[in-house]
Image (cartoon, rainbow, N blue to C red):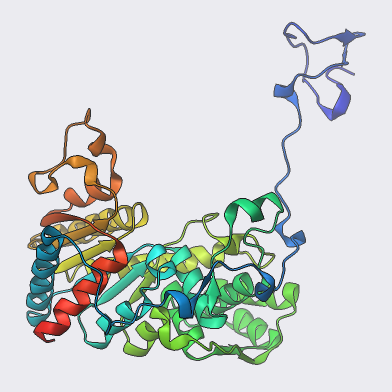
Length: 407
């Protein structure tokens, strides 16, 4: 029969066989080159073996790294001190006119003990929005629940144990599943879960009934995901008590307490909660999609406001530029002016490419052009200021400056 090949491959009718393919008879190929080999199957993450988080060799303990806001901040150069003082002045002016102050940060701010500095800024009403990436919330949750976080990537990837920690993947997914039932985004759902020490899991019958009664309901997909998790992972219905002993130091929990918008902007495959049988990209994507809309809503409040991007080299600038474009798109449709008058402070340890970013972006043949965390923000209207400084040192000194001058 024409086209019958070894290995189940078929060719419909006469074909041209490139050099190197040996033929046995009229229709059977005895050697198949790599380009004609079978496609790899998706990895079955449900078969991953996970381990108790308490058994992990964690590299940081909360009591060892946590910065006390009342302590003196570390010294900085006179130039940085002047930039911090000017930033504090602009934040106070923005809040006086009820303009937004958004603080976008990377995970190292949490890994390096800056949690209470964020909490104090919220306590005094100096920030109106917090945003981070998935890793920022993972360290937040692990510190809140266990008091320890961070692992050796090099050692644990080699043994297949990097990220395969049961409670981290299980509880963050559970928080997002329960938050999806309320139409909550990633930040609010996980903040509630930490602050309220868990949540309440509905029964399978309740979920089935809600889906059956109104399948077109906007929450149907979230209910179906939770129903699947109940069946696959044996989630018991009823109150779920998860004691977060260190929740007072959690920015997520305190944002929920203060009703400060806190958005999370993860990537699928970026974070260790991927390495868990609970992993569900739809659940993460749904929560992150809601948070992007919330983020953009805060960008709409930024006229004459302030943006702080602290140690976020990729997520912050990438999310901000899309959100600002969406806001300006809607404003232009209504005949309103685009967002303006805002000041953006970008804080990082790198030298900024040796370029003065207050003069705009460098030419393409300058290496500084390829510093995304500077280039993107320099294109976002307003005025961008680059501060070369340790992220915790900057935030600690900023808090001290704001506290010294009053709320």
